[in-house]
Image (cartoon, rainbow, N blue to C red; front, top):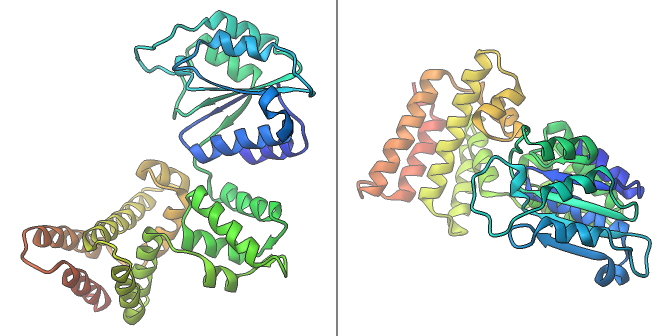
Length: 342
């Protein structure tokens, strides 16, 4: 688990080689930055930190650097990026890499160097000898979407790093309002932490008052207001989005996406799928599935099919000029509120 690796890094318990791979860029960058900031001082950066792009530089150049003694410090940090040879991708590489030399280093890494391999790929080729060797010898960090438990742990850990405590119900509300994008959550948490610096505590009230809503989360809240019979609040959110110059067609598309998610969650739950498997099947974050499951209770299959069809028809009518785009969404919200979809 990535958070366990981060805790070891904070204690300066470093591995000789790290393999950080996956398509969650934030985790890759955060892991790299934590290693660098903890392993070498700012004064040593010019002497003991190096970064290589393997699309431009042969791997043996990076290995030679890793085997060079640190200057004016205890250790070196060498980062290598884009090791496409770890994947099954067929590409015409600009440079040739001495993989055997790389394998030899992995088996016997320099004790004074931390080698960080960052691979922004969803999957590695497990059949390759070099991949097997790396996974066996290195500290492996899989940079994938955090599940709900990991996400909440990360929020608490980030808050603690800012010297504040965040209440459990505040964690839940923050994820509901800001979404699950780690970059956005980082910005929100840092802002909330600064505001709460006097009390060192972030509660629900602070989150509610200060958290910026993403467009997707505004749409989720808008739907939630309607299904709970609060049409005035739903319309207020919609009008605020228009004032913020959000394009009605974009709002319509996200509305349709939310209802497709609700429909998919409902159907897969009926088949016995758990939250994690539904998220994997629908390619969304598990926390979004959890929220969609709550909204799914307010609709039957026939209503959801009719709603999705209505939104699709509305998109067509807007694009063909048959209805004013702002009016179409307004009419849809009133229909939803009046439960006209039967």
